[in-house]
Image 1 (cartoon, rainbow, N blue to C red):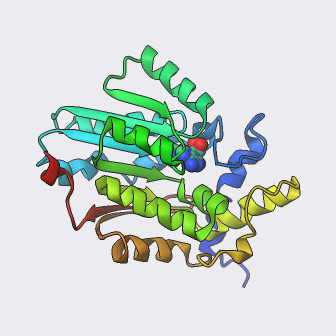
Image 2 (cartoon, rainbow, N blue to C red):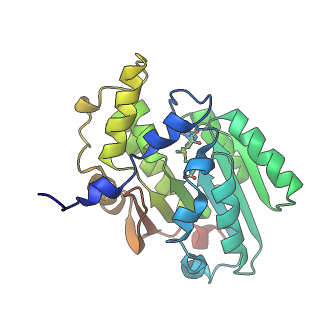
Length: 255
Ligand SMILES: C[S@@+](CC[C@H](N)C(=O)[O-])C[C@H]1O[C@@H](n2cnc3c(N)ncnc32)[C@H](O)[C@@H]1O
C-alpha cells in the first residue's frame, strides 16, 4: 500500500544499529557494548520513566536498589538519583558480567562524586557470583533489568531465561524491566551467523519466540508472584518498560 508506513518501519533495528556503528566492539555475545550509551542514550528511556516512578517506594524506611547488567553505569546513576528524591537512606548495587564496563563505571562515577553506588563484576548466571550479591543484600526494594533478557535467553535458552526471571523476582519487591522484542533476537542471531560464531543456540529451537514479551509478562505474573504496578509505555526501539510489584513482599518481613 503506497504511502502507508507500518509501525515497525519506524523502529530502529534494535541493538544491530549499536553494533554496526560501535567501534571495536565486534559481535557482542552478552550485549556488552562498550559505547552503548552513545547509541542508546538514556534520555530515550527517561522520557518514559519520569522520576515519579519512585512513588510506590515512598513508604520505605530505607532503600536498596539493584541494577542487573548495568553496562557502564549511566542509567544506574540516573535511576539512583530518582530514588534519592525520596530522601531515604539509599544504596545501589550495579553489576555487569564485563569487568571492563565495571572499571569504566567506577572510574567515571568516582570523578563525578556519585555516592552510595557500588559497581561489581558479576555474572548473574553463576551461583558463586550470586552469593556475592547476597553479600551486599539478600533482598532489594527495587531491581532494574533493562535490555538484558534477550542476552540471557540467547546464551542460556528458555530454561536459563526462566531461571533468571525467577531469581530476579526473588530478590526484589519491585522490578522495572525492559525486555527486548523478537525482532532484536533475529538481528542478533543473524549477526552471529554472519560472523560464523556459534555462541547462541538456534533461535528456531527456542519455545519462547514471537510472543516473547507476552511470555515474560505471563511468567512474572503466574510463576514469580508478581503483578503489574505500572506500564510506562514503549521505547523508540519498540520495547515496553513495566514496573512489577511482588505479591509476597520480602523487605517488610526482613526489616
Ligand atoms: C544491552 S546492555 C544494557 C545495559 C543497561 N542495562 C541499559 O539498558 O542501559 C546489556 C548488558 O547486560 C550485561 N549482561 C549480559 N549478560 C549478563 C550476565 N549473565 N550477568 C551480568 N550482566 C550481563 C551485558 O554485559 C550488558 O552490559
